[in-house]
Image (cartoon, rainbow, N blue to C red; front, top):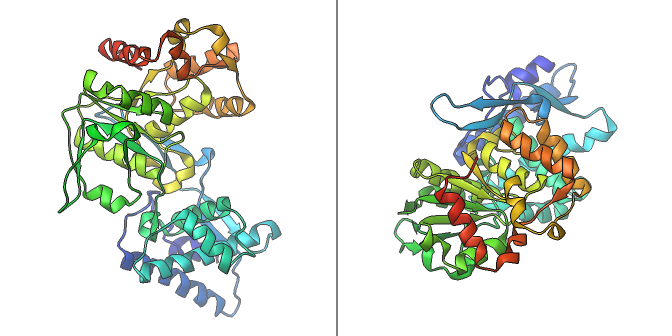
Length: 381
């Protein structure tokens, strides 16, 4: 029975573990095939519906793809399975949640709608509160369905919510609409849409020399207000912390359109900041089969250990427990370069963290000078 599940029910015969980008009709067909095979097994003389085979989303099932002709590397998942079991009490609800999620995604696709994960949560809270009680359960189940059907979240009708902003020397133009000049968006920046099909259709033009990814919204605002992109021809991007899917999608699109532009990251000097950089650079295990799709060759501009001499020791604070947990996770990453490992080891050794804002001890205009000097000297790793 397990072999039947593996080979025919959920497309897990595919040797490459990635999420296909499919049309609504193709996704509906995959869901229909899954349901028909499920009913077929139920109707058999000895039905044994016990487990759902999912491509495993954990570090043990992770490998690294290293580009032969470029410096790009990214995470991808191997052909290994985890299970959602109907016979284990603590997993039975997860088993049912997968079917509930496929049902609602099918309805969304029939109605030709797009919804966010947050909208899905409230819908499921109303219709299936016995199975869905938190946003995390919804998010995990979406990834279960992606791992089961081998299709992207967007193919399921789920739209990326976004916190991302962009500014600087970039023109964005949707088909049949006026171009948006991101250099005149003031300090608020231009919001990045969560509609991935719209982002895919964008025409983009630039005369920038660099793309700078900024961890913090406040730092992004400071640089936009100071028109840093006029001093150093650049495009500024922020996801206001941990990167959302839409911001990563647009950044990846820009790196494909402008492969000659270095992508530089400005993050806090702490394990969380390095974790954010690595998510842009390699993708994330939590994204499952979609992890590889949005990885970019991001370089670490700052802050780094050699910048600590620029700030007073009083501005540094002890590492938080969460920092130490992230540090342990990052240390185990096979693809983490030696110089990144050295920075991480230094953070743990001295037990301190430094924030970008600590540079303001030299004045609010110092941040732009600091970045310009590092960029001109190609002081990034």
